[in-house]
Image 1 (cartoon, one colour):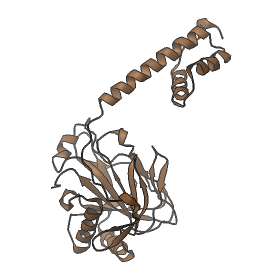
Image 2: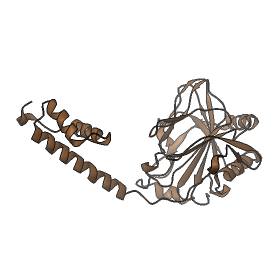
Image 3: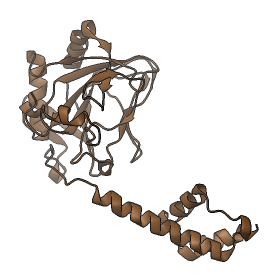
Image 4: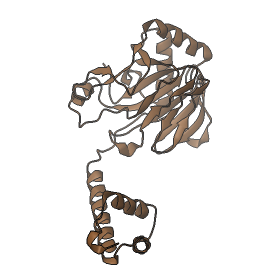
Amino acid sequence: MSTATQTVTEDLRRWIIAQAEAGCRPEDIVAAMTKSGWDEDVALDALENTLRDRLDQVARERASIPPPVPVPEPTVGGGHPVLDGGDREVRVLLKMQSPRVIVFGGLLSDEECDALVELAKPKLARSETVVNATGGSEVNAARTSEGMFFDRGAIGLVDRIERRIARLVNWPVENGEGIQVLHYSPGAEYKPHHDYFDPVHPGTATILQRGGQRVGTVVMYLNTPAAGGGTTFPDVGLEVAPIKGNAVFFSYDRAHTVTKTLHGGAPVIDGEKWVATKWLRERVFV
């Protein structure tokens, strides 16, 4: 390869960063480049400039990370496998620190799951997502499900579930949004997204007036699909199986990707999926 035609491309820069982040020594990266035909001086300059730019980028990103805020936190210290939900004992099936994810076993009874589904069916409409520019909502191709909302405490069943969740995650009932029930048909999914409201969008200020940021999510599985439909966390390679009565809780202490709470609803492969979602806010939700 002639040095006159050796141009450092974005693909090469990405390769250098990947090698460095994987723990390769600088001299090994340069050796690999020279073995592939790169002039040593060009390789050294490419390595130095690429890594310097990467360090500058990381420094800028860290400087833009907002400070953490208090979040819901279940009392799971000491390795206790069963938690007191007030009116029901709930098992801890999985816990992860970063991101903060806890899978609850038996959060809901089969009867409660069936009742929520039957109450929701007559009120289903195409699910919507937040419009970042205005704070409103609209149908979005990324979310191919049907859904409806129960206002907080709307009926006895909803009130009982909300109080159980509040006790389990140590967060006030009044700081929660209403429960949303969603129905996914075969092939339906919700592509990976974050539940917090991104401050860079102009509509966020309007949304935050109703109770501040979202700081936690509880996804409750109301049935067990024949195949597919898990809750995925792509940043950490985790997938939670949708088992009837179980739930996955996760919190995010700032509106930033550093929380690693990117998540999605994997496509339903066979059968259907019913879930109920509860979002938790910083303050009283009105």
